[in-house]
Image (cartoon, rainbow, N blue to C red; front, side, top):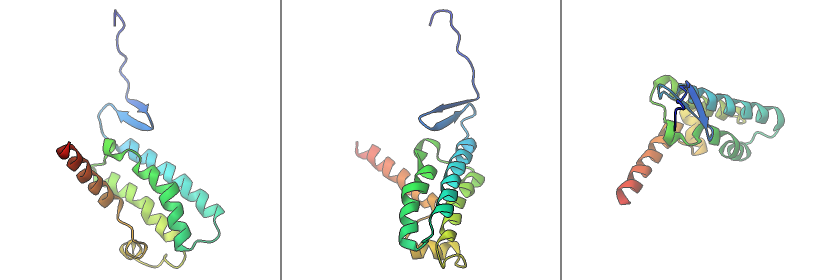
Length: 134
């Protein structure tokens, strides 16, 4: 590289993933939370029929991908980050008609959803299996 030195940066964003110099993913979790939050706000303002089938389809298509985008590269390890991401699904399921008063676990069971942490753990197991099998 001749005499050109490398610059030191605190955060580098590549393909939508923030790589922080200390390799912690808190900033990425906050970024994913804010993007998912904006989409949830748009859905809340524009969709009038909030029946489970429609809302679940919108969630899986528009909201959850922001919380799960390439998470195998930045899987959160701190409890506060996991709770922040889980809050996305928690708040969204409350928007569905007649489910506001239910417990979070009851809403998940009724909608046939897993927690986001369970989905991350399952995906990690699948990746390890793929590596093991070649």
